[in-house]
Length: 228
Ligand SMILES: Nc1ncnc2c1ncn2[C@@H]1O[C@H](COP(=O)(O)OP(=O)(O)OP(=O)(O)O)[C@@H](O)[C@H]1O
Ligand SMILES: [Mg+2]
Image 1 (cartoon, rainbow, N blue to C red):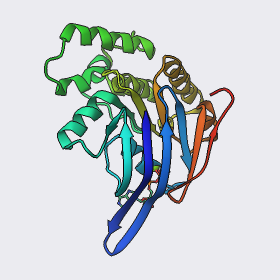
Image 2: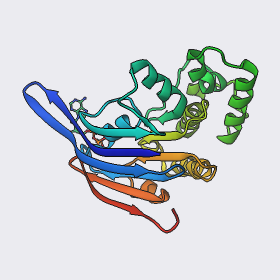
Image 3: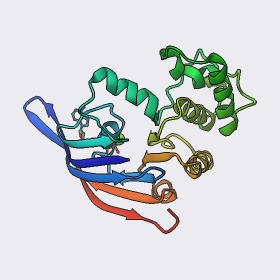
Image 4: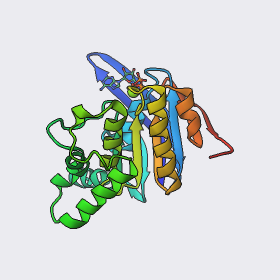
């Protein structure tokens, strides 16, 4: 479903060129659960941003769900991103003045022609899925970190994306809360969702069926485990 071929990404900072990604070839199938690991600065977030069409590579080919991401114009790309890709970040990025339910529905605000009733039902289903059905009217400041991250995950799923991308989703959480989020990812993956998670933590990486280890903008290893 995802096909990256000879992807390179460099940033120009003054007269210095930073090669964040030197050369990557990756194929990811629908339903895979992939962890991207590696030291700070190895290019993980840069790769995730390219995968999520938030950034474009300097060189190379990127095909996703049969489309070449380069042949889409900016409008098509943002429409594709909104519909097919769910993002979860280390900082939950919830809107403080909105309730749990409103935050989950947030991505729908930018869409025209949506069925209000169906989307309300879907937001309720997702709140239930992440175990927050008794917190619908609470605001983010009234929730724990793990609960806020679960709201963010529910929000990322509201458009039924093909792919869930997460950058250090448990980076701000304690071990127990981290387990809750990883259990939720397991559930989602068992339901067929493709998940790609960037992490520093070995335990988080091991929960995924496939681990891609990066170093200096290159893939050092790419291993699929027996349980994956
Ligand atoms: N917008 C940018 N402008 C200039 N350099 C950048 C930019 N984004 C990333 N880089 C550089 O690219 C390299 C890879 O960065 P990236 O954020 O992908 O690393 P990372 O593996 O996610 O690290 P971390 O684990 O610390 O989040 C780094 O050397 C970084 O300084
Ligand atoms: Mg990063």
